[in-house]
Image 1 (tube, one colour):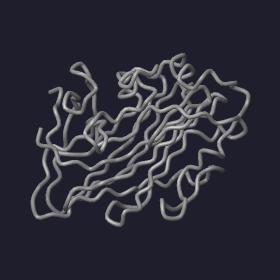
Image 2 (cartoon, rainbow, N blue to C red; image 1 turned 120 degrees about the vertical axis):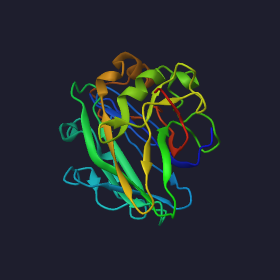
Image 3 (cartoon, rainbow, N blue to C red; image 1 turned 45 degrees about the vertical axis):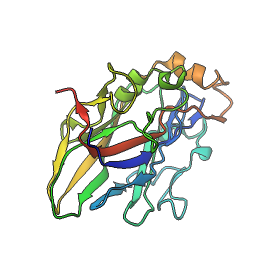
Image 4 (cartoon, one colour; image 1 turned 90 degrees about the vertical axis):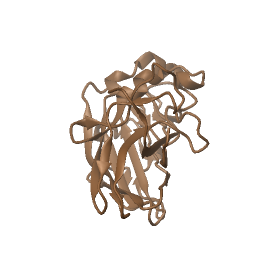
Amino acid sequence: MNRRNLLLGLGTAATLSGAASVTGATFTNSVTPAETDFRVIAEANVNVNGVYNSDTGADFVSTGNTTNDGGVNFTQIDSSNTDQLPAAHAQGSTASDDLTATLAFKTDDADSENFSPFLEIDNTGDTDVENVGIYFEASDGTNGFGGDTSANSGDVATSEVIQAIEFNVGSDKISTDNLDGGDDPGSQQVANTVNIPSGTSVDVELDITPSALTAGDIASAAGDADPFSGGVDDIDLVDSISIGTGPNTTS
């Protein structure tokens, strides 16, 4: 696989009041706020920008980026304000090394939600960038799934994680959609890829489907904490995603 990667660290934290969390390093359940914290390493001539700022009205979301503590503040989410979920925020750029992307949602939410556009990929080079996909990979080349997933002896199936968190360009899913060959990045298959001509950009939508996650597995990973405590527990579902060329595809 001839892949040039843009690496995004993802985390997830959880509040057990009936919501779930998705973070650059962790996720969570029944009210578990999910944090997603993307730390991005972009290849030459390609920049990734955070472009989703519409949820800044929530009590726990601040404008700004990693340089000024902007984004979703997961420690402020508890049973008193989970009605404001889901919430998302993305701002900054890999060009200036200050991209912040955060997300929080309830795992017991029956409805899917999309955040569009969430990220923007710019091709600033003189040549086209072809066959770009998004897969779950860490900076050291290992899988980017978290410690609480089946990829790392945890409770939550990675086959559910890839359906709960999807990245799309238009109507095409460009993130991992098949793990029949295994969880390693070289075995993951994305549904589709996208081409980015020189001097242009594409918008990437983030779609979440909480019902794809088995509630009991999430609760077990979170330690079956008291759902009325309002506290925050961390469970690790996703550590990083990679944006690069030449991934395996299901088509």
